[in-house]
Structure formats: structure tokens, C-alpha cells
Image (tube, rainbow, N blue to C red; front, top):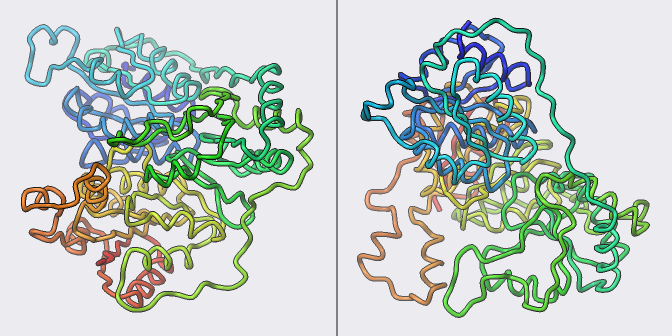
Length: 518
């Protein structure tokens, strides 16, 4: 038995049974060990950003980490953007980064790099393995850290620690400490603040607080106090649809967000951060709440967020109160748009036809801004989205969600510009025959950047600026790209064509891509 075997065994004993990988020479012993562990599902990504984005989507839906396998520092560097998104979503993830043998580092071979310094900004936990016998403890520590911080962990595996011998041992699951409980004094203080401020208070949620039952309990508190309820602008996962809380998100456009929060004098954070603008703009504030708004932290990441909400509801006598903000079921099927296709029509069609218990992976960026609110009364579904603003996560997120939940239809809402960052993920969708419908909003421009130019006061675009903001010369052909990677695809230019294609894609298993020419 070698260190790579111990690594696989330690992952498996802790229930980590999926590995998204893009390996290289330094990781061949790990690959060989995976071959000896048929209970480990191995999914190949053709680019490291696909690997970490898929691990992110997997963990958001499975509520446990996947492992990734990355090749040395440059391979991990390719993966950093979606590690950043996972860190912002506080997604549990265990990255295994291969490195040169410990004795080979002195020679400064071409792939030698400072992996720790690369990993630390995007990881909550970084650990270099020292010896073959150190492999098991290191992976156990990473597993615990991924779930208790919670977030991204990175373990560096030197090649000689992978191939070196270890003594056989009977492994036991690594013990996870309980999530931290919020103390009674904090709960009483927050309850007093909510009573005092009433309708000028708001509760802001993220993380596990955005599951059905905690949201409902928070809405009971709102019913007692008159407080508003929001989620962060970007969140890892929200359970939504008819019968669940119609959770408003903080708006991305800064003026809309400032208007949305202008009357909030007391803000209760449940795992969330104080809302801030995505970027700085001339003459605009950074924080989206007014200067006099009092901020109270009921719970922070790593705390038991659902328990904190329940404790607050008990303190306020709200546990049996009928909750506010519950989305009603649609009384009838919404009418479907017709005519020339545009982004809003595509969103309306997807919303109207959304299947029960599906998973929506949203990286539609500017094209899909109406979609989230269209779906409040849609059939119940899970909604996962781009969290850290590093575009190129939508296609990989859908991969991970489909691997975690093979019996559920996954709908990917994908902007075309950001989709090109990790278009290789379509190949993985085809290879694994994942049940994903990808809707590409093909406006052939970085539309969000047109809006950002205007937001910073630039309203007249010349030739150079236009070249930086548009992707129409030459136009991207998503149908050809998808088919070239093994995914069936078709283009829609009218709402009727889009409806027909979307219905057909929902009726069959396996990956399908619709290029919505808008």
C-alpha cells in the first residue's frame, strides 16, 4: 500500500466518493490508486476551471465535498477562478494538488512553483503533506476543515509521498465537530432590536439559512415583527418555488439596490455580509445600507445557521405564526411568448415550463436578470448561481449538480461570453451523459460591460471600446461547438422555436444545448 492508496481510502471512509480531475505526471500514482477503488467516481475535465467549478456544483447539491485532482501549481492556477467562486459560496471542497517529489524541488524543474502562495487566497485551509504516513492525517484535516469552516481546502501531495509505502491500517471516519451554536445573549439582543425597529428592520440570509425550513422560520419572525427579508446578492443555493418563501435577493445594479435597502434601519445578518456594491462607482457609496443603519450579526459562517433562526423565533414567540412571503402556486399555466426571440422571452418560457424538482444553474448574467423573479411561483426547485463574480462557472456548476443528483433535470442558464471560459465542460457533459439542458443567451456581446461603462459615466463608445465589449466578429456558433464536443444542439431565433426545443429537451435524458439567438 502506498500514500496514494491511503489518500483514496481516507476520502472514501469519510464519504467523499467523487473526484473531478485533470491529472498530470506527478499524480499518476494517485490515478493508479483511483483505478483500484471502483467505489470512487472519477470525472475528467478538459480544463482545471471545469474541475473546480464542477466540484463546487456537486457540493452545493450533495452537502458534502468532492475531491479534485490538479497538476502542480500551474494546473491549480487554471482552477483558481472557480476556487474563488466556491470560496465565496462557502462550498466544501478538497483540492489535491500534485507536486514534484520532495527531493526534486531543489532542481527548480519547469513546473516548480510556490503552490502555497497560489492556493492561500482562494482556500480556507492549505496543507502540504510531508511524508507518505502524513497523507491520511492531512486529508482528514482537510475534510474537517471543508465542512466546519466551511469552504475550500487545498492539500499539496508531493509525488514521493504518493508512491511511498505506508503500513496497512484500519481506518475510521474522521470525527466532525458540531456546528457552533449562537449564545442566548446574542439571540435576545437581536430580538430586542427587531422589536424596536419593526418594519424598518430586515433579516438577510445566506448559506444553509436559505433552505426551505429556515427561510420559513425567518418569515415567521417577519410576520411577528413586520421586518423585511432578503438574501445576499449571490448565494450558493436557494430552495424556492411555490409554497416556499419568495426570497428577494439584493439587486446587482447599485441604484436599484440602494433604493431597495434605503428604509432599513436595523439589519440582522444570518451568515451574510453587509451588502456592498459589486464595484465602486464615481459618486456612489460602497455600502448599500445607509450610514445610520445598525448592523447585528445573529450568526456567522461556521455557526449553525438554521438553529440560530429557530432560537430567534422561539425567543420572539414566532414558531407557530403563519409565515409571510410564501409564494403562491400558479393558478394557471402562464401564456408563452411569441415572435422574435429576446432574453426576457427566453426567461419567461423557461420559467413557465420549469419542471418540478429541477436544479437551475444560473450564469445568465445580464440576460437573465428577470428570470429569478419569474420563478417565485414556479414548481419547487433548487437555484444555484455564480457567487464570486469570476465568470465561467455556469457550465461546470451544471456538471457537478447533475453528478450529485442524477435523477433530477438540470437547467443551465448561460451567458455566451462567460460560457466561453469553460466551454470544455460540454465535453464532460457528453462523456458522462449528464441530464442537462443548457440555454445559451447568444447576444454576441459582453452586455453587462456595456452597462458598466454607462455606470461609470461613459456613454459614447468608439471603435476600440466596442471591440473590447462585443464578441460578434466573428460570431460564435454554439451549435457547432456543442456538437463538436458530443452534445446535441439547436438554435432558436423565435419564441416558438425556443419553446419547441425546450419542451423536447425536457422530454429526453442526456445533455442538450439551445442557442437562444437574441
